[in-house]
Image 1 (spheres, rainbow, N blue to C red):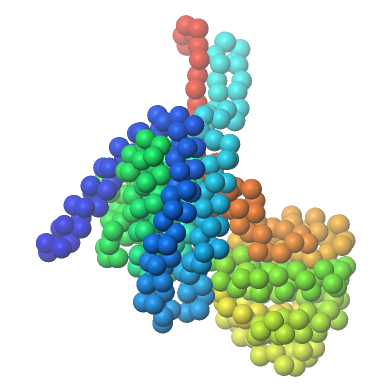
Image 2: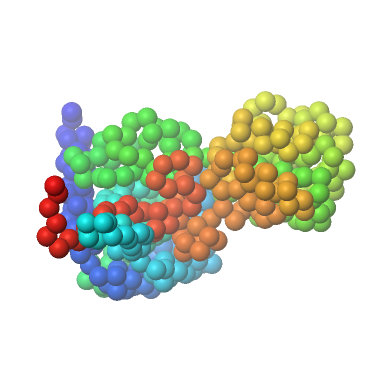
Length: 421
């Protein structure tokens, strides 16, 4: 190992040790102290707004060759930064999950047993592009009593560092150690490998948030548990009973409100018995600047579409592009979702209550919805204040991951001198 690699390994190990110390302080801190810290973070973000926006402008200039979707995720505006501060305030106002009893019972022998929420420990957060994740992840970890080591993408390093400085100011204001929220100060990819190793047992859980290549690397190399956030290949199915105006509005919003988010619609499935709605929907999408790629039957109704390939059904575009398929009924729609979906967010537009319930039961995604835009796949919209990601995993947490989902539990047993025979 050369000197640079050796120095990095030592620096990362020091981050891990400091994070454990930060966790110990958080674990014993009162709910009121952690609440005050998050509220102070929000004020510090506002106080450092000019510096954060300057750093973001430098990141954007350096990232001029990135895809438009990535640039959109990277970009901060005064309005978006105020949204970051408001998100922090929302998290500070959330009920504290730490110490909550989720169940309690008494055994015949008199033992009183409670299941109580407790922090996980030290979270390793590895993410790309989005500088707002720096604040969201920190706030949710503090709310849930976890320390966090943040490793943002190289493209957002200046923005994330400047936001982190504001967060540390908020922590110190509340009397909590800066080691509770740390950021990896280098863009060296070897730092990710160090985190995936667990930093000599310091990290309890790794959460990746980014593209497929990042998530797959984390899942393949991590020696600690991973809470995966895979791509959002989201579907909306138009049932024959769908109200045409509702269907048009929902598809347009789900696709075009913001194309770069993981809840953006990527494939539209239209029932053959509802195919008459497709030209109107397609016209609205085209007018909004969306390119359409359709199967043979969709092309027969909207000839201006580009023919879809097999790859289109598996593509998360994160761009104003939508694939369209005509399907032979609800079962065919759910079969398509099972075959091509990423298990993120999928929905139905229908007035038929039986069809809605059948769809919701058949589709096994983290989020299934009826008569609503897929862009509601967001922790803030779920009332979580913010999210650290949307888990497509099946264990521990699924869907938007907020403060409650960043806790585990322990059993607290109270006795009066019982011995086991």
